[in-house]
Image 1 (tube, rainbow, N blue to C red):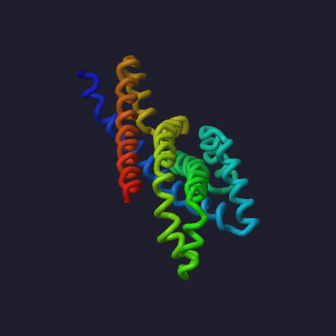
Image 2: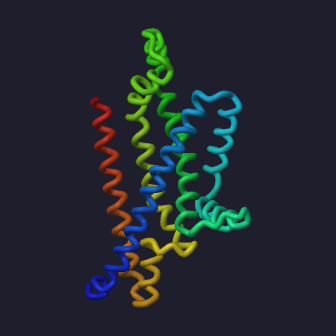
Image 3: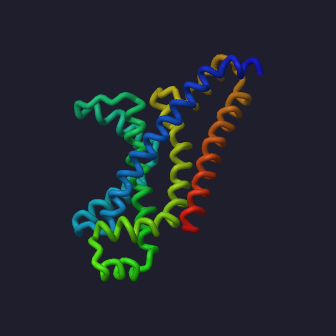
Length: 213
């Protein structure tokens, strides 16, 4: 217990980094993914093709490979990114590909008659999206998005491999100093579990709310 208390400051800093990376990736990935998803559904043919190539390519690349590619390739283009920024960019691009497919599936599950009826009463395309299609798509969208969010939180540990002191790297440093691997990896596992449990719980409550709306 004394070892854990003595290591709390480093664990806390690592936890904050993990939370910050996860939030940044989910926000950026969801916004970009929403745009890509709408492009898959309603874009011009070249735009749909480009979005489909992006989604299928990024979903097929392991996150670690993507992180290394961003971290080491950008300096060759004259743009040097810090390890944490490279990690956020890579995971955001990966997250966006999954969110795009999730949104496409959610919107596709809405009966076409809903959109036709909205068009029949004179709603514009943007109004149909805002007031008819997207509100109904939220219920099927949220469970899959929550699963994606949980995966992103777990994948955030990969940034430790480019020397970002997140929760995983902080734990490795403490283990290297104390030689108490089982104890501190168990602490890290519990913290990751708590984050993902709360995230899943929030997703379930939102899902119930929109299902009853």
